[in-house]
Amino acid sequence: MSQQKIPAAPPCTLFLFGANGDLVKRLLTPALYNLSRDGLLDRNLRIVGVDHNAATAEAFAERLHGFMADRDKGEGATKCLDDKVWAKLAKRLDYQTGDFLDPATYEALAKRIAKTTHGNAIFYLATSPRFFPEVAQRLGDAGLLDESAGGFRRVVVEKPFGTDLASAEALNARLLKVMSERQIYRIDHYLGKETVQNILVSRFSNGLFESFWNNHYIDHVQITAAETVGVETRGAFYDNTGALRDMVPNHLFQLLAMVAMEPPAAFGADAVRGEKAKVIGAIRPWSAKMALKNSVRGQYSAGKQGRKRVPGYREEGNVATDSQTETYVALKVMIDNWRWAGVPFYLRTGKRMSVRDTEIAICFKPAPYAQFRESELERPKPNYLKIQIQPNEGMWFDLQAKRPGPELVMENVELGFAYKDFFKMTPATGYETLIYDCLTGDQTLFQRADNIENGWRAVQPFLDAWANESEVHAYPAGEDGPEAGNELLTRDKREWHSLG
Ligand code: BG6
Image (tube, rainbow, N blue to C red; front, side, top):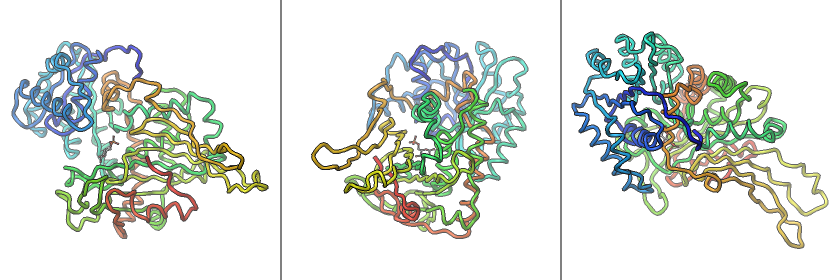
């Protein structure tokens, strides 16, 4: 969404399944609040929470208000809760008590689709993933996905979308039995981030980039999502999931696709998603032996995060004391197409690392040594283009420059663009854009079935190889993963770009 005046989205009844869950509390409510404050919701938009706990609309609104107020008191709080803005949002809120598996729930929902919304409805599945196919099936059985009367009917599916290739394919098949691809909005919240969307704009609106964006000039690409948090309260989910499933086929592959895709013929949903599916589909499927060679798993042990002592992963709540689940993963993948032939993509993500930093570092081939043969200089260092997704949003080129003085000494300098220097960045969750796009029917930032399945196809060899043979290297909390993660690059005579 740009800063210029954009119209309010069409009227709609937005059903939030899993209304009492974490996602509604932490992200969807603040996002809806921001959209309402910015005048981007139609006056007739209604929001209906759906969950099994009995509650009234007033009690539901009161709870959400409590979450927003607590959020304002929290660490790094932005003090954004305005009572007038809240009052307007609260008026839109309603609540339906109901069991997700009971057909009676869906009969009740049908009655709640407001006449003033022209029959438009969005069903947002912010539930545990086991309910995704069940709710979709019941929505279909109840006729709630039928658009023949004119109103749109859309279903938003949260992550995780499957746990491997087979389960993702099965889930797609079940959804597509009761609705069309046009009605499905598979969310990856990374696509709601301004800096992620900006990768496409930067690449395809500046002719400059295309001239060196290929294997003639780029040596390799690094994609890192480093977090300082541990598993927090999500031990039970995380212990069955691990860093690979949690972050790679979705978030990291979306970043990879943004960097590596071909220019789409248009900026429409089909063209953009078609190019993404192609590039993710071009990731070479490793043999079991190569999957082991090209992956490193790590798990944090007790350590220090800043000054604070933090427990190891196996001491976290709801985590098995002998857990072999990885909280860090580093991978090397190759993209088999003409643009990227021979250019490795190194991916890493981990919890409890030294800093929070999501970045893409594009490493260019170094200048030839011969240039400086007569001087004392070492071989020039490679140039990097760093695209920082968060927290310090921007793009920076690392260049070598001559340090002023009588000697010929090179030093690293930066040529950069920081968002905060050019744009007013209002705090946002990233879900604002995604909800607005869903309301307006723009699927560009949502994953199509083939994007998701191609992602799982590329990670499946790692899952299979690890199931038979797997080593999980310990790393102390507060450090950047295990030594083996560094060796993945040093054996190729490369190194990770330093974080932060
Ligand atoms: C979620 C993962 O999808 O993304 C979490 O389940 C992770 O484990 C989070 O912490 C990271 O998102 P962000 O926006 O903080 O980078």
